[in-house]
Image (cartoon, rainbow, N blue to C red; front, side, top):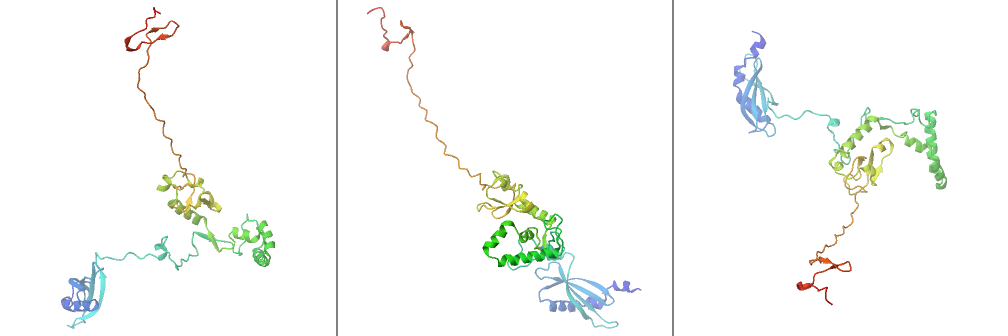
Length: 311
């Protein structure tokens, strides 16, 4: 008989060692936490695992597993190990997810640090002086080390110069301002992918499809409280500066709108009441026959008529 066939039948002495297994489970857990004996499984020759119900709160469906064994030709059963294992219908924790995938907007608090990966698709390398300027740059064709030296020299020159002299240079523009405009002083800048993700978030939060924008009298593009953005995003987004708007201080789509539009709060004039209509009661004169002078003769009161043939 093979070993696999012998292991299917539990050893009799190990199978009867239920009290020994329960005592080991209660020692590992606590009295009253170990429940009824559920089942046993043969792990091999003279090796049996006893399963007990776990009554610990929060461990629904879990079982205490106590493995006992005995040596060959020995009658004494010894303890092998005790462990808490999930059963078929056990309540398990969700699968572990890395922190970078669990993080959601608004989770960061004061003092928290959020490092970005080196290959973050939302960012791309900026100009730091190690590479040449872009081909369409006004500084193209100049060596990178020469550009860095000129920027540093101008920084020192503007710092030591008197305010009157510095104002003259600010009027004509400087290499430092051009370098900052082109993103040359940042290690990484937003990529097209990062810009698109940001635009999609802003469009969903404060875009034309929101209920507020659907009920607005006009769009933000014509509102005086809109502060346009710089760069390519200026064509589609701005910042709301209306303290009474639900989007105050937020980036809004130009197609967004709310009831706080600068041109929507025009107070209507007080309507004037219509003039009172008066109706008068009275008898209208009706001519009976034409008069001698071409006019008409009215009837005499009290039924008496004037005798026109007598003087």
